Image (cartoon, rainbow, N blue to C red; front, side, top):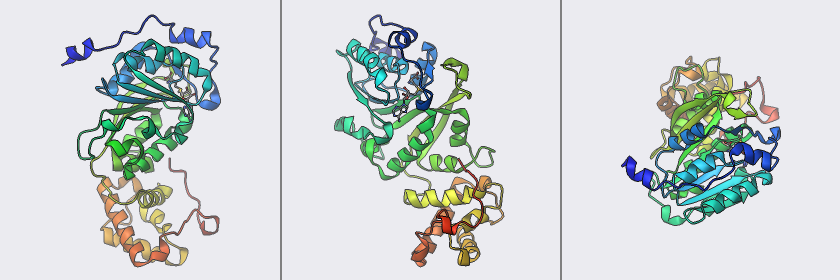
Length: 338
Ligand code: SAM
């Protein structure tokens, strides 16, 4: 099996090294776009290997920059490659790569912001599989800019929950880099000191695997933090099978006072005058001990809490749109939870 993959690998014609590309096109890294380039071919290949088998797949790469990971992807002979890069300075070097593999790989280069790009538009519909099937031949890969990585994963989780965008075509897998601490939080199980809102959100809709670390020293310029490579595979059925906004709100409020008893955070789901009574009702319905702290709650227990909250707002629809964060409702300080 492995030998068959090797045969169909693409050998790119001699190209300038990434270091030379950066010099040639005068691509000084821009701090405002979180540009840290990976130069080491071994690590670039390792990121792409973490995505698994991609031959004949449609691969979307976020933030290809000078094209280091892009080269490693092309070598694995995908059928189509969609590149989304915000900084137009990189387009000529990406066009050079597209030209070098034009007989084997169909490359779309999009100069734009990943947060505003509808990737589904560029993915052929014949890749579609049913949600209950194994993942479709679509992979999303990216050494993400730190400045957008957390926002992007939350947006993508929302799309996954609705089976929209690339996920209208099935359970497309993601292989992404994050600031190491963020990657650890995404994977953190119950009782882990890193456990937070992001852990429960990611694990609710995806199987999350921490693959490996990349030391900051492997990048140019060197970021102040190390990096973690994570794969996410959407689950056939989420742990909490309720609308994204409801789950997000309950988890966010419960973790808003992460050092306190979790019921304190849950109280902020309700207006001041009924706060204590309703939160107690929610914990009773869910059969959760109110003095449990947020990091001690398992994903399945969060499901019971979300279901209990859902029951309460069915009974008292006036609480559904209550927003503790609206300035007039804020009674106590909320801690930053990401
Ligand atoms: N993939 C290259 C590598 O591994 O060396 C570059 C990675 S660098 C950390 C992040 C890249 O994402 C940069 O090329 C940057 O211009 C690009 N970028 C930043 N914000 C972006 C956005 N909102 N949408 C698309 N690309 C973005």
